[in-house]
Length: 179
Image (cartoon, rainbow, N blue to C red):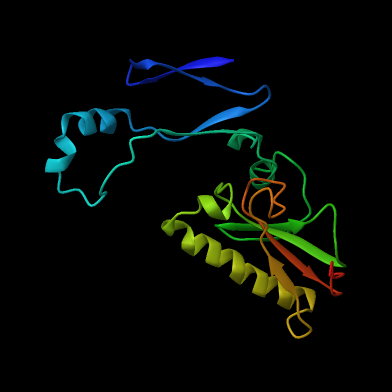
């Protein structure tokens, strides 16, 4: 499917983007008006701390689900079932349905953050709250003294399967080494 690219109702040189079947389009940044300013030189007079703007549009065609299709967002909203073991105003934790250890919990921020690479500076508190939830879960599951693992898979090569940041809390035995 070809989609005409435009900014603020203005066609941009007849440019088109081809979206592969089954993919969704996520616009990461659109700089149409900024590009007009770049073309006029107005940006040189700006005291903005943004610095030199990149003249390319950053567009990502991705197979990531839209937020409304996010399994973990549905669990947070109680639209999908889960065995919830911890909750506060920013964090939810529930049992993994495919456990890799005797105790395997998923800790998620309630606000959708697709991956660590999408996290912003103002997400630091929420992500820290996820880590503190892991400490509480270690205490309640009896693994605070024995030890546990806390990990985050990020991106396709990092093994991320659900694009909503989540921490894997595992305990009860050491994982098998691939080496």
